[in-house]
Length: 309
Image (cartoon, rainbow, N blue to C red; front, top):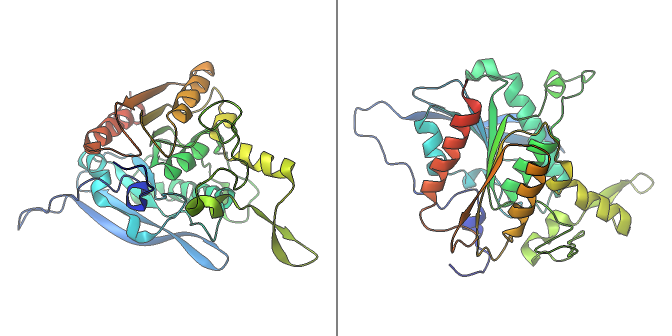
């Protein structure tokens, strides 16, 4: 495919075909509950959709809806989670907030809130709160890995009981993720702040902070602050031995996110003793024909590491 940015493709796995309709009279393969509010930010609701299979296996997987750090409810594609639903996984399609309104650290915070919400309500959804996976592609892959490597135990003193819950996950499987913005494509090439990012994505990295005196959010220009933020949204720097098993799937001709991002991340995971694999797709750009086969590989990964031994 051409190397021009395709928003339809950047949507998490939206290239997959829609699930075939069931024959008349057949029971539905899944039920869908739309626009469940998992939190609020700036007076606006943060939502997710819940897909419950006809024969649930008691396990949950979070799908991060984000392409180029854009996110919207209409980007949710049931076809992209078909293998998970067919195997009994309850899937939570999370819309974690979108640029240009939010930048990556804020979007990451929203996603952590979603994980806490799902865990807090695990019994109601019929899933094991200690066996939750996460998946996403491109920006959604970056956000998934930030949760997988830097999710925390929650604040036991939080007023809101949801915020007392852990945002850790027990397995991750991602497609062509951003992992190291301080070494982009090769060592030493830094994408700090908006530097180096294509125009459609710059707003996601146009970091702001509140000026208490002015009462406004001002653009951060201090190079050291920007570099610290950039490091904080690069999951490679959060890798620790207790990270969950992680599967990476990446094309070797990706013209948007270099394969090097997955290769270096795999090296860091293995150096830390984390179970990890990288599946390289020969000739694959930022997406490729036949990706439905790779979603089966994703489902296999969750079967291996979420199901009880």
